[in-house]
Image (cartoon, rainbow, N blue to C red; front, side):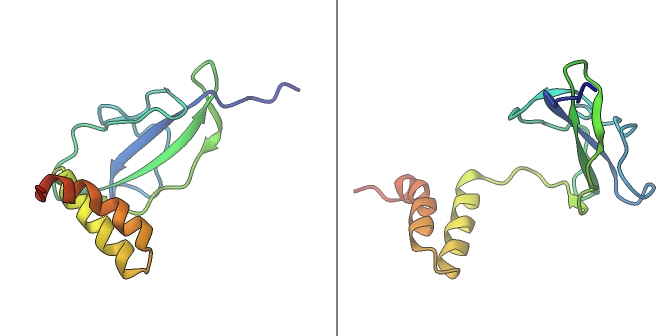
Length: 119
């Protein structure tokens, strides 16, 4: 038979605690349930800061239909305001240093260094 080949994916989302697992019916947030090409980013809007949400991904065929069901439901994720990019680079650099990953720590610290140190 014809095996369905994934051509893209869709993200499904819901509030934590509203039922058990995420399903293909969880399309209540802007950006959820919309077929996207592989590698595309998804922005989900309408989340309330400091509330927890769960997500799941499904592969989509060329007709926009789910292939082999939806993936596992994520762990709960708290919606937060966007963090400043330099803060994220700093956290990554510090974590890499603490794990003994010197090359990664230096690479992650470079954007911060260039922004804050003027030679």
